[in-house]
Image (cartoon, rainbow, N blue to C red):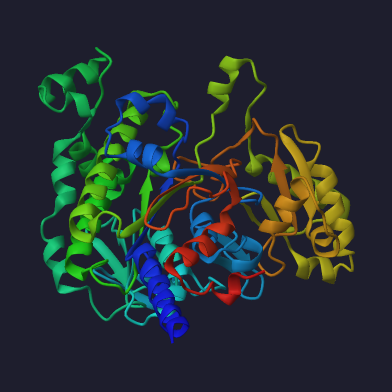
Length: 520
């Protein structure tokens, strides 16, 4: 009898401990285009309740994406599915769809409509695996999953197919919008929230450094125009009138404040983390978005991005303490498409570096192929370190696909800055165990990737067509810090891991099964 009673008490005790450690809310934070070293460079200027709270009270791990290049959207898909691009299918912002003979955006869908404005909606239909949100909802139908991002791509791919709602900032209206993939209409609280027009407040305010906000903005504006002093001032209202878009906010740190404000409002209105039905909230911040190459890593503009984001994180963690309760939530923070040093910065260290232009390389490649095989449209498309050949034309000309892929590879390797070129044939028919080849294999999808994948030397950077070129943007920094904080974080976690290990780790904290699509 005593044994039976002891067994019951033991079971109850185990259940009690598990319930104690189980998190009510998981918050995933990714910061795009961030230079991770900033956290050390500016650590003494950071608040105790912001980044320093995660650094000093949390656990730091070096996480490896383990594929050819890191890119926003691709990275979010990897984090939340626990799979590599070769498996989850999101290999880039866009890829060439050979079946439909067109570029395919990784989230844009003509079968869905936007909520909050007119236009085609965004969906996670091209994502080929379950996400953390799916795992949570499969375990508990009462779990809620919400995702917020500066851009729709990151919000949609973070939330996955089971999200209650994914929200992103409209470049047309400055309001928060979504897609009818998730709901028939925006929640009433969000419609009211959108009337505040917080975006307009920041537009009229202009961007100056945090330390200059208490000063005379007009004097600062004049000094900035004539190049006096070390301060800066950007007239956002004038830029808004000129370009007629709220996109300009994405090139300021204010957009992160907008994400933070919405996240706090969402937690309150959707009652996230208030009961034992664990919820998920994903946040996607940005470091100047499409203008992240316009300033050096030590520029005052970037310093201001770090300082302001630090205060946004501090405010958000304080809100979690108040609304969810300290010890009842788990936070992870990591980086997507982490900032690399530009050639101008590397030259100061006497390192050989430059920009590699795929556009110029392909122009020469087309001439080369015309010379070898005759006039023809041999290259269908190219971007994000891959080239798509015209397989229909190749077949019509009765040319060996393997041979022409090898010719292209031999041609590209002669360009300065290119370190390795692999063909689709070699990636499909061979298996590697180390080096760049493995990174290429992890990023390669037989259905979606190009015929040629190339890697640049460590100090070389892909050139852009223009400032807003998103296709050639990617980072070779595949190893980034991952900060874990809050409920269920064990002190004995290893100091290095694959980024794909994060999903099983979070499932373990939540005491739920890992999605079978992620178990390899």
